[in-house]
Image (cartoon, rainbow, N blue to C red):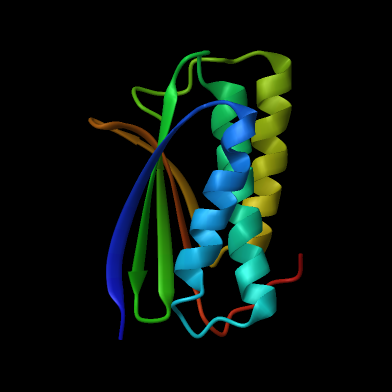
Length: 131
């Protein structure tokens, strides 16, 4: 059983999307997830990153904490002290991201606490969703 945590901090700029997707795919390959489940994770990581890019101020960083526990992958996306961009485009992006994340993750939460705003995602092997 693999128990690993990997933290990735990238600038909230679209050119880092591939880095986030590849990190997620590499880590999920350490589980027993099949191809469709791996694709779900790649899509979830990508949507979470797009959401962060479109809602955070320019120059901000996005912190991803990936945790593999056996055949479970959790992703905690730290958005710092909160979502700062509240224009219509950011709101549409959030709505679309929510739809996608709910489709491909076993659980998806947007939480705001004393440490800031976070997206928390989980995916367990054996739980393919229609995407």
